[in-house]
Image (cartoon, rainbow, N blue to C red; front, side, top):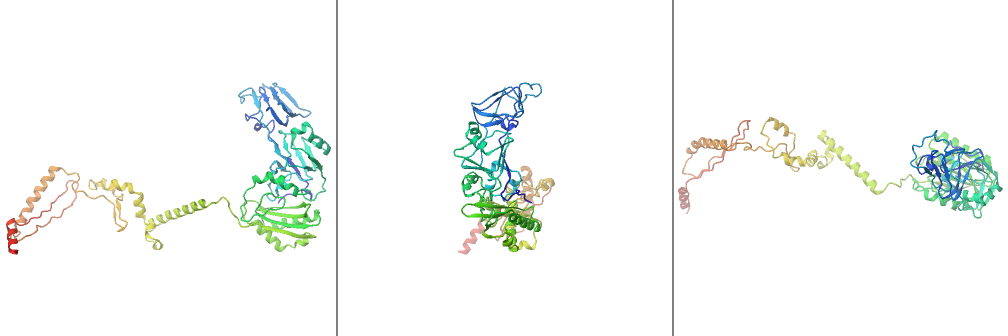
Length: 510
């Protein structure tokens, strides 16, 4: 469950986020601490106060023309005394340079941390992440101190602790206007210091005056909400995804706000949503509109409408008039459906094309192993025809394999029997081997002897034919009986009758 400040007036303690200190390697240009043989060199213009640790061992200091060092009462500085105790292997020269410190803004929520762990609560508005009018402010003395009070007309706080020393109001007012305070605080023209002691309802005395100075620093870092209709609570600079309840109340009291927190906490436990939701309940002080009690419920991780559904169920079973006495419902806001703004039309199209490609590949594989499945009849054949896709993939192999002869031997036949030479998409015929060339590997002299022998064998058959008629000699079909040693070759003969008989036949016709 979420933790809250002890008082209704949000009396919390907030720590200022500091720059890297003297004993932090991030504070040095060389990214390592100076050794006793190195001089510490400050920038020429060091507009900050540099706290020095209690013990420092360096060769010397090169101080800036403008700046200040903050030393404690028991600080000790050794000049080269620890050269034998600590190695200087990392040093590339005899000097170590300090980086120019960053000036951090007072009204920037990113520069503050809460003592109660509220930093991790997503439901807390932006304007309550900076020091409230009665918060205790602590600024440690670890790193360079430089604070920008831009757009701050009133410095309203409960307590101010600087480097372990509690600063009173009058001393702080005088510190701001002197030379030392000019290095610590920037943009202090016309600034007034006010201390409050638990006598304010809400975080800020008049939140309307704080909207522009704080939101000026927050708006550039706002993330685009992941819902169609985001909501914007009071004291918040960025729209969020969740649910917001706002009640008009006549006064601020502890009993009412504790009762509301208990109601929400018990409902979250009952629905087992402790790890899914963040909520925050606080008073809002407005000089123009009076006092508000605001409830904010959001999803802890990505927005999944759990927060809006929870508040709708809670509202259906809760009588808020009994929980919040003398109140009037001012406003209810619910965020819309989840929405991912990072998804574009191109990314959606790419996802669809990838899905279609995976389906096509799976369909072809299924048709290869189950070609007779009845479900394939409902799909056009050209989509899942494995032979068509195989011919496209193995197109380069077909061109060269069709010139390889398949009668050279059993080894060659086995080597090329698995190659698909061609595929006819219209007839569906497949030629899985090269054509047989009967003259492949023949000796020309052997071919001539075989031809003469076939002529002698065919002569007796020609004499039995009648000579007075025009008869076509029988055609001997090529016998392609293939063996390992020889191949037979026949030729086609076409004999006709003599020229005289042809002339007589022409005269008779006339």
